[in-house]
Image (cartoon, rainbow, N blue to C red; front, side, top):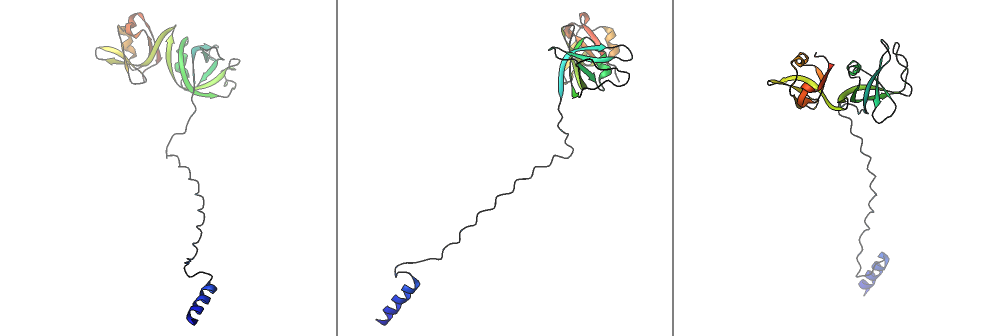
Length: 200
């Protein structure tokens, strides 16, 4: 009797009933700290910077008088004239009257350098990095490096294709290795051609 009373008092002091089991409360998991944002990957060593390329298509015009001549592109869409500059200028001067596609960087409007005179009114200035002849006197034209191809001649285009030149005049061989333009390559005898850059 005393033993039962003693057990009952012990259970009451512990605050639980004879058939109840209690376990220690589990600690609440702490909230995970937010992950730090991933650092941006560094640019590959030697990777070229991204450049913005401006392109135009139109007819080449040489304006002014020697020695203050300028090369201007008249856009075929009728926009403002574009004053051309850069290392390709000497070649572009040979293309007066031809329709060309040019690519480069548009520069801020500025006055011409000493001896060039002011740029045409309303013109923009484009430093040309590359160009291609598209048409001459309304006829589609191609430009590339003139080379021998078997018994005939061919034009090596910028994309690596060879364009055979049929019925090419014998005098054209004087320009082997030069960059030229041609119209009517399937019958060059009745077509037209011209020099862009002499062979190195």
